[in-house]
Image 1 (cartoon, one colour):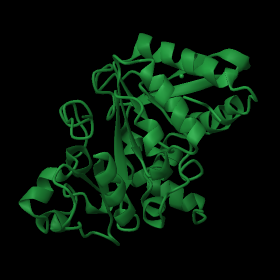
Image 2: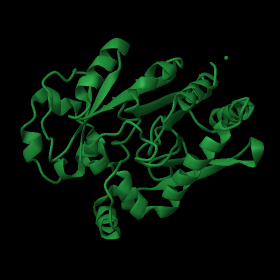
Image 3: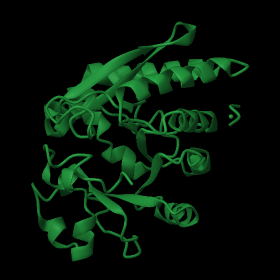
Length: 279
């Protein structure tokens, strides 16, 4: 313990179709390798959508740490597993996805050190890299908070880099309190029809934002969704391709929809120019 200082099978043809429909095939990705204690290394990644002020839309700089989809998402729902955008990324950007796999395996090896010194040393190494290279940092383009130790490790890294703005989306509601030890980390709760009731209670107790996933199977938006929430439409609902779902939203709900996921990414439509999830 670090003190404070099942998905359905998918065939290749499915992944190929996902790659064709996913924006991952046309997104600019970047990465960097961090070498550290114990002979281990981790990868940080980034892309045009999330870069904020780290580089530019056409030339982003790495500012994220990612793990595996589903395998590292212990509280995922059937809805989010079916809609997971990382399936498309895996097919379109296999090298990036292999970095996620490496991080997933390596971070667990780091945490197996019996006296936790290796984990603390790696927190210091990771923090130093972020401070030297980033002004903002996204946790988990893929994956989620998979344990209490990992949540506390994230919090340590964030508190060690106070001038950097961190943000994440999580369905691991049981670890939210450990994450909130870091005042510079914005915690967004990832929500859909399946976990909405639990998310509402968690948000109410912690004053957190809800980020609601709407899909073809579950397109409706709860009437009790707080006005500071963000709505993320799955690919098939995006109004730039099919506006029937969009037309059914109220004026307030339309203001809550992520502009990038609705209308496509660009220099003015990405994380940074849009700050709905960032504060």
